[in-house]
Length: 180
Image 1 (spheres, rainbow, N blue to C red):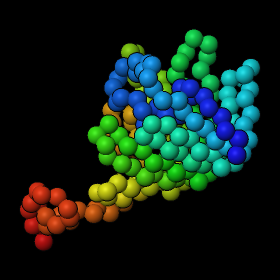
Image 2: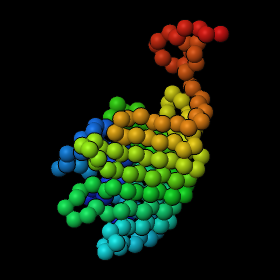
Image 3: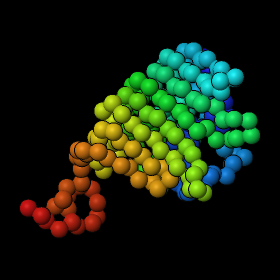
Image 4: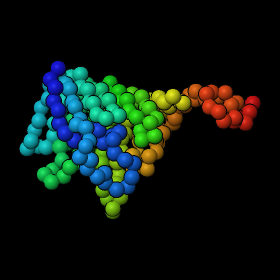
């Protein structure tokens, strides 16, 4: 596997940025993002990179795997990637700022970032049978959108399996009212 190290290539923003409506401040102590793949093609004139075959992205609190990764590189003077597309057999494992862990699978994941009217818009749209698994639940939806700016998941026709029963059984100290 060809190893390519790129500082702040920014797929890591999917899991590393604080969830606010202001752009993230550069962290000089931030760990580099490591991308491994069978092949890579960088088009500096077109400002994009394509990684193919056994793609693995490693960053602090994030691991992404897929078969193909397309990254639109930032324009000169910009430090933030605006668009990333992970294609085919996407698996994302990450830990949020509250140390909750997530295991996400989908056929495709598209990350987009933009600032409009002083508000940061940062979305990850998962398609192709997306599924989010946590210690508490498994949720499927088509598509499944993660609004990083608000910290919300948006589900269309969701199906949820809770590992915490509604009768107070399920691993918490809280006692839920018995519904049935």
